Amino acid sequence: MTLQKSFLFLVLLCATVMADVNQQYNHFLKQHVDGVMTTQKCENQMRILNLNGPDGKCKVKNTFILANPNQVKAICTGGGTRTSGNLFQSNSPFSVVICTRTGGDSHPNCTYKGSSATKKVIIACDKNLPVHYDGDVDIGTTDGK
Ligand SMILES: *[C@@H]1O[C@H](CO)[C@@H](O)[C@H](O)[C@H]1NC(C)=O
Image 1 (cartoon, rainbow, N blue to C red):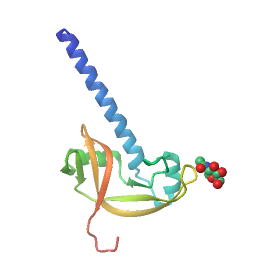
Image 2: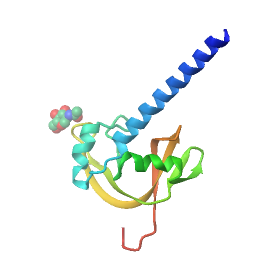
Image 3: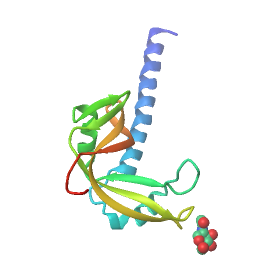
Image 4: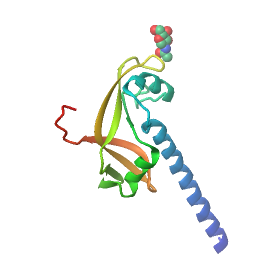
């Protein structure tokens, strides 16, 4: 390969990797970030998103962060603390809505129940973008949440 060809190859490779990460990021946003989510909307949202678990049945549990995309993205770039590998825990708590399946096997027949909480969230970052919701931690409130 000539130098020019190698360079072009590298540029294309980078572009491909970025496109892939952007796709994961967009999927993450759709699935986990919704500034106007409510517990009442769980059933409808889960049906629209059509998420399934590894067993092929309706996803058992899905958490929505009530924030705008930039607030969540910031967890990857200073708004969070690395816990291990590419996982970052938010420094500030977020309001979340957790949708838990209560019945049914496949969409659109699955039923969901929503609950709300305030938690620090743990997300996986790739190229400074959130790509996966890994979990959350209680913030030790004493108001019974
Ligand atoms: C949903 O439930 C209806 C009524 O019980 C049933 O006929 C249908 O096959 C179910 N659909 C799926 C995708 O499981």
